[in-house]
Image (cartoon, rainbow, N blue to C red):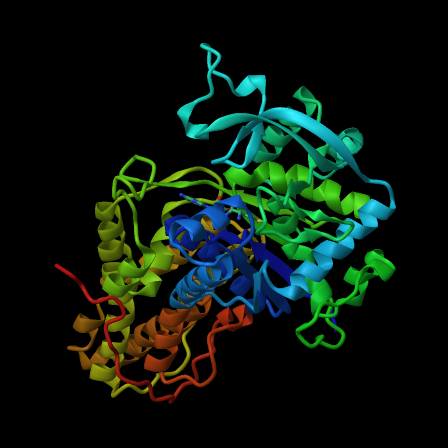
Amino acid sequence: MNKRFYVTTAIDYVNGQPHLGHAYEKVITDVIARARRSFGEEVFFLTGTDEHGQKVQQAAQAEGKSPQAYCDELTAKFQAMAATLNVSNDDFVRTTQSRHKAVVAAMLNKLHAQGDIYKAPYRGWYSWKEETFLTDKDRGPDGTFDPFWGEVKELVEENWYFRMSQHQSWLIEYLEANPTFVQPDYRRNEVLGFLKAEKLADLCISRPKARLSWGIPLPFDPDYVNYVWFDALTNYYSIPVALGDAGAAAPLGEHYVPGPGQTPPVPGIRLWPADLHVIGKDIIKFHAVYWPIMLKATGIPLPKQVLVHGWWQKDGAKMSKTTGNVVDPIAVVKEWGVDAFRYYVVRELDIGPDGNWTDSGFKARYTAELANGLGNLVNRSLSMLRRYRQGIVPARSDELAPDLGKAACQLFGQLKASELQAALVTIWGVVNRANQYVDQTAPFKLAKDPAQASRLDEVLYNLAETCRVLAVMLWPFLPDTAVKIFQQLALPGAPDKLAGTTWGGLPAGHQIGEPQPLFPRKD
Ligand code: MSP
């Protein structure tokens, strides 16, 4: 089996309800995964939930539930949201699964056996709320800690440390030699800036069970559980190993012992190294510093790329449950349809900078670009074909072929580079060109003049074929809409291969189906 294009999202904390940020990351990753499938590549798309740690333990306690019961409930909501958004993940990892825990234990055992993990006492100021030790740098000018940190107490603890500091210069060199490892460039520069300015400390990878029991036990010291970030990052690698990717498992050697309740291995599966980790800007240090060092130290090849997206605000302010300033993706999908949601988030926000959700901006794009743009084009093209030619496709004509060929070529490059916003601009270039073509050729006038019958045939062919090509182009972004266009054209198969953008796929004499509005106007 060939190595698959392996793409991941961050795994979501289950200490609250899924929101726009979670939904956005899943949608952009889904578009990338579908785009690769439409190139004909084999893809493996992983998403999931991050279920251990203090935040989850506290959230469960607050609801009077056992952590596992609490996680089961919330994970079901994250899974339901992914399904509602038409996210085409191949697997869903939960860090409480034994298949994942077995790999975390193996990595810890190997690092321990190599002497990369050691025990040492630590005295420091501890924030219970944020589950982290603070330093003097976290103190305000008056010497106190910001209320953000909640209760801060001095704590002396023995803990286990991972020797991370010794890899600092290697990582700097690696990031400099591999400029695409972290993208966009300004995010990579941020990581390099940090690595050059500060000395990396060794990473505390344990929490005493006495204060946190909800985690993966350290296999070599039962009084401790694993630090949640070490556990969580490993998900990207644990699932390939659990699914039977022999090359992935090899570096773990005899340290890896599959857990009980293991999913049956997929014969010949090859996933690792991951091709792409899609994450938000707040967790870049974990993915571009801790994760590569963890892998390097364990002797595991590094992922190819970490792609960092920005954060959404609503109406120019941080989204917050307490002020009610939130966007509920499920409610938006119920009112406007899943493809309207997918379209808006990808079109509005390029992968990189921060974005701002406004309901008026959403409605404006829906009306102009979906209803009046794409929807109107498909509806009038198909309606005219039915009205003037009983829905029978005329002989092939290539008037718009050069424009569409150019767009398809551009689109391929943009999809390959994960430039999703630009890719939608390219597709809407086609939508606008075709709508302009209707206005310029005025088929409703041609239809009144019998001498213009063959010109009308040409125009109707170009429009119907453009609709077919658009369905193929749209599939990674708006899969339901793409399928609907194919259905209205009464075409067999699915619009799910980019090769289908080649002009001339609509055969003369083919009978199309009934046009239906794709994006009903809501006034
Ligand atoms: N559990 C960790 C990730 C572990 S990955 C090994 C975590 N979870 S999270 O639920 O807080 O965030 C999950 C993802 O959602 C992150 O990539 C984060 O950046 C993203 N977002 C959370 N809020 C967001 C916005 N308001 N806007 C866009 N993305 C946001 O971090």
